[in-house]
Length: 392
Image 1: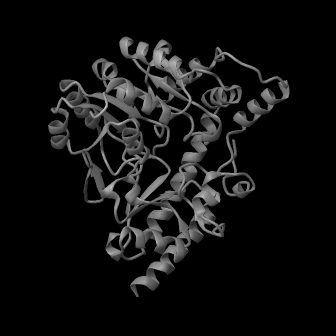
Image 2: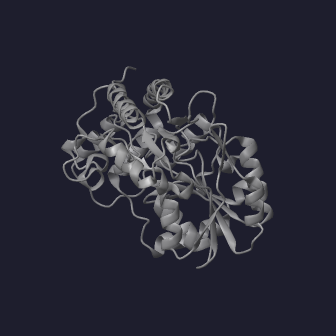
Image 3: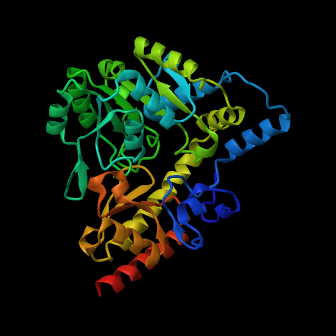
């Protein structure tokens, strides 16, 4: 099947967050909008067709979960990632952040620690603090252009009985690591030995580049599975963040029962008819579209690699997965605020400032490359000119 990713609709004709004044600011519609983590590509035709068919039914009252939805998810995980998930272990959630917050509130007490591995998805910090837990940092180690986990540091933190949970980002946003089975196995052993629950955000699991395979944390072994909660959603891989929900995989029966009770208490166990339709269509029939997207993203990444190599003072932390690119601007000598201003005013870039992902992100920025290649090339031209003027 042929898909056209070069000419998407103008996102400014709808209140898309990426191009909204809330993100760009007033009068900045001209900026290269590459901050919010969704894709500028039309959804897979099977998703659009399924939504159209559901719309034509004309009645949108209360609905149960469609019989085919959970089998579509588990079938996808088995076929795509060789992960056999018991459908009884799979629960619905309104969104991934809600699932993270429920895990934090259920399986730790106020004041206790939740370990994160920064620079990492900024909402981890907000969820922990807003639930009155303590952020405990186990920073990643950057060496030779690649991030690694600090297992010695993790061992020390996990040994503290006040630290009850680890939020794992797998694959990692924003640095693009696709954690290997060996890395995840070592992390699993440390957390299991110290009774630290692993809550794994795996929304980018479908988005990996050639040579790098996503390993679900819960697929490591039965012990890892029992000591984990995995959060999944087609939001990222199928570009339906505005019309889908999420899933939690909870193998441990006691934790699963607790999550069910909490979902009921918070009344977050209702269904959205359009979300159900979009997700089932994605998992059943969206594979060819996703494969095409991954091929297009690989071409975009090749372009970024080639162009950044010609910009003195800027380094690319080459991603193994996700459609997000982590750029190192530290050598051009700007503070975080000055870098943010420089990128917006000189390069005409609206990207995510690195400091949002923790203090370890100072001097970095996160670029979304899921956009038409011509627009990306134009933006890279702008960056090259801006840096040349700044350093020359």
